[in-house]
Image (cartoon, rainbow, N blue to C red; front, side):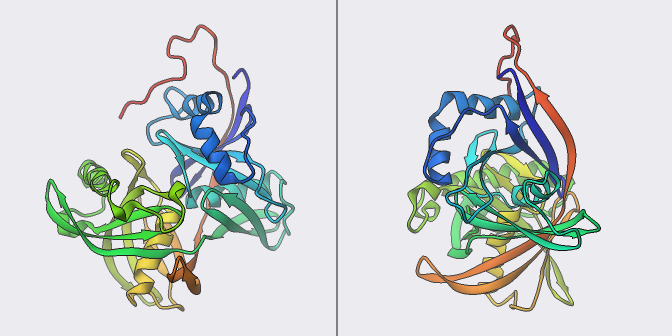
Amino acid sequence: MQDIRATDYHTAGEPFRIVTAGVPEIPGATVLERREHAQGDEQVDAVRRLLVNEPRGHADMYGCFVVPPDDDGAHFGVLFWHKDGYSTACGHGTIALGAWAVRSRLVDAVPDGETDVVIDVPSGRVTATVSCVAGEVRGVSFRNVPAYVLGHGIAVNTSRGPVQVDISYGGAIYASVDASVLGLSVDPDHYGDLLALGREIKWRLNGTEWAQHPSEPRLDGIYGTILFEDLGRRSDGPHQRNITVFADGEVDRSPCGSGTSARIALLASSGQLAPDQVLTHDSVVGTRFLGRVVQELEAEGRPAYVSEVRGMAYRTGEHQFVLEANDPVGLGFALR
């Protein structure tokens, strides 16, 4: 770990650290297999810990390792990580990876128009479509794996009383709850309470049947809690604001890309988001994604929706990280 290189981006305020050199080889025939290996490989995981922990990272850091794709149909594969491990999907990261792949010329892009960047992630194959004007990246959208509803109106007891929770899958499993029923609004003033309740709801559900993927146990687990606030309707569709609490108490600064897909499944299935409408999805810090349904189909024996989520990512830094042999904090630490 004498020379680890990374390019940092943020997507709608949420950090994303793309590691470009210094990671040991991660074997596996598929990205999902590589994720499983990384989880048990101390040398690989030491790189994650070094980059996500303080003093090089922080408790809400996010990043990835770029790995080979499953086959020639994708440009590359990726393993997403955070302070507590490896996630199965990451929409804001997919947007950042699309911008990075074009800007680094890993993928040749048309200077005026749209270019597809195909990426294998643990939950499947996704596509980031990068829009350029005069050779500059102006926006990125991504098409996710099919999203679908797993449960409606699940009763959960919380420290603020019982709530009704909806469960949906958008590359990872999310629990959605209306923040207003908890006496909260989605704004920075309520950040501490929202974080605590999101974490509480996740762990109350995580060991239940609602945390199980219909066919792939490696995708099991409630990844996050989406506490949303309904802001009414715009002329083109619903307008909501959310805060997503994922892993063990991390808070997404963006509107959450895979979480937006999970919300789209709930809204489309209930008739609140028509095929020709757009979900305007805001974050707790005021940034925005736009989401829509691009295809209705069946997945896992139930109605499902392929979503397109649009946002933008911005480069924030180029880094060379080292770990000196006599560094007393070693791989670092996490404080919240």
